[in-house]
Image 1: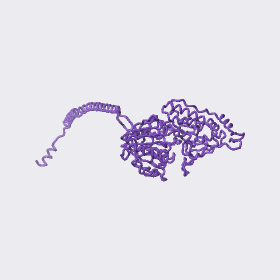
Image 2 (image 1 turned 90 degrees about the vertical axis):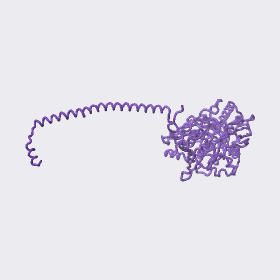
Image 3 (image 1 turned 60 degrees about the horizontal axis):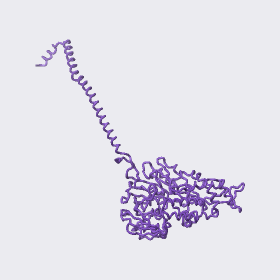
Image 4 (image 1 turned 180 degrees about the horizontal axis):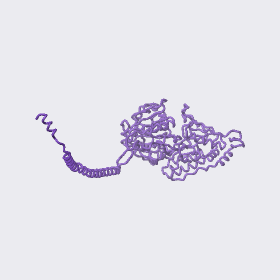
Length: 598
């Protein structure tokens, strides 16, 4: 068909609006039916379906949450947060580390490192009672002079050699050897020692000595390493800075950290060949500082986890640390030199005894110290009634001083005798923050009594002599404020027996009383505890009557520690500071989730 014909037909088409409207309505109706059928109706079904799906999802979620809660609750029933193994315990303390040989350890840092590296025949448990360490037990013969000690067979040195009776014999003989210059030499004079076999050693004493087992807490030395070293060269030997022990920790490195070379760190690692309970800690660090202020600075910088020797500075310790006080079986005394021109007079000593308010002395301390009025700690003499010290009476003290010939004339502050000489006391102590507070208060109280007091605070860092050489050995004082380490047994023979009143003895008061000597000696020779207690109570009464000293307070160890770290328990009884390590194998530095024991 040509194009013109098609166009003509298109032109002849007529437009019918009615038909178009009718067809549009029909299309609308059909479209609406289709929309209702295929869209709206299905949308309604979708809403109903979504409600069902949502409800189903809520139910499933609740089921999952319930299951998770039940699992968590069930798990918590079998788990708990508790200390876990691993990590490092870094402990700061005062004093240098010049040696790690236990024959020469004197500072807190040296003694602490010694206790961790070395073992002993016996040590103390958490109640302060003697317990076996390398020894398994002992027997004593009828004379009370021969002690036979048996040793365990599984103890080894940290080079895997066995610990035997020969090591015990070597250690004791070395302590006795004057060439070795061991600190504890006096304790072993006259004591014989021999090995009966590899695991049995026998001690023979010159006289019966019931507290002798407490002397068997010395650190053992390895005979196979040191027997070739001249005793006079032991202190200078390489062993003193690189020791081999048989304790729970082994020395890895002795590190100098300060520019001046004084602050040091003994880095120890757990030794898993240890015969006892293997340590939970991987490492133990002994940080030695020259001043208490350096310890506080290290705490603030979190260089260490814990510290002792912070007495007087606890208020400076960061609040993130817990600080607690632990009494020690030692005492701080004002010791009267009974050979001094003034204090040889018993009346003057008694005047000082009743004229000194020891409660006031304790009040100036930064720690809460317990009173210690006697030469022994009260709990050590539990079965006998101990005497009470004379009551404070400053008026009576003044009258006693008058009676002794020292008068306080009108308008004068210092008493004089008939020759016009001032009543003067030379008061000495090692330079220490706490001791400084004590001697200042004593001086104040005694000046109020009309006594001139001259104070000598000895600073060993400013002298080429030690406190022992400069002050103790020459007895260069009238009154000495000093700590006496009593220990777990009330045997105080070394401090008050007359034979110890010499330059190298520890009777710093130069005390001499025949009755006291007899009681002290006999108390050593009986094994019945009740009888020993009565003897020490008798000695305490004689001691108070003679007034060779004033008991000021029981020593305190102030200890700071981060809360997450676990060490010794709060209820521990400490014969000495190093006895805090009695359960060191259980110390931890972290906490984690562990399963409860069924």
